[in-house]
Length: 232
Image 1 (tube, rainbow, N blue to C red):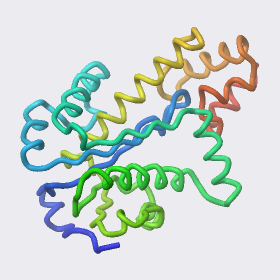
Image 2: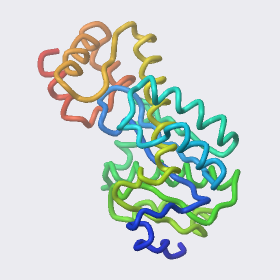
Image 3: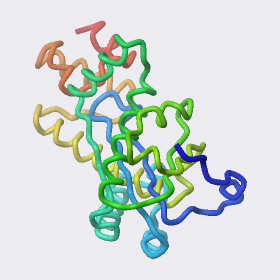
Image 4: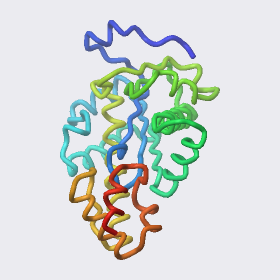
């Protein structure tokens, strides 16, 4: 692993271009997948993305997020990766990591590293940026041959960088798409988040399909699972 880029320049608001940004969506949502995305952005594509209104997906409505996802795909054609981990696979991975004494952050690091490695198979880039969600060694330890040659910057509020903002939009748009598919597949609305409405939806789901089926639509390690099953 090469040393990270100059943090002083970044704190001053400078962007790093070209760079790969990665971000995830669905981490805090009981229903639906975990999605991690990576986008390569250079000076030319950054100008287009900024002009189109690309920014942190948390500051965008769902419809706007989906619109901008199409802009990003068109602007960065062949230069992005989206990894969707459906609930069943997510639960398998989480349980495997827990048996190995690892945490959710290990799963997140694995997803970010896989996206970065796959994208580096398509583009050459010296810099990557991701949010600092844990000890920096989590992501670094999961990188393979290509990833170990890149300058990896992990920082709070990484979405201020255009590549990470673009990745956050792609990840959120795919999360919304897959959540809608799950809702249609089971014929029940599956809300975002982990609110009381989500608990009620979970209880309705279990009543119709049984406890075992919850594994197909939800992240079972959430405390929400206990609340859902308490009255099931």
